[in-house]
Length: 123
Image (tube, rainbow, N blue to C red):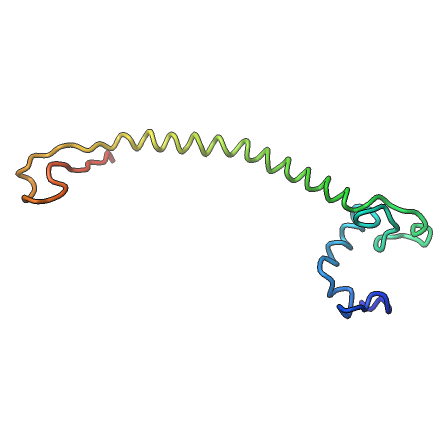
């Protein structure tokens, strides 16, 4: 989209600016204005009258969204983490059922480093 001289700049068009689409979607969905400070929105205005009033800064909306996401992920980790620990402990304790049993020396040739022992896993 060509938006006039102000949007052309060094990028050519506004689509060349990093995070352009993300910021447009953010302002449209969250009904916010500037990013760091309250300001008139660039996107998502319904009428010219909407451009006369500042809207809350979009950074506040981003912080709220990240807070919600981190809370949800933290909750998942609280549930999944102990489950993994318990499963790991169970597997370790179950694995201890595998024993190393001594065997007679006649079963092996002389000079072997494993002489006298045989692993016998329980299947």
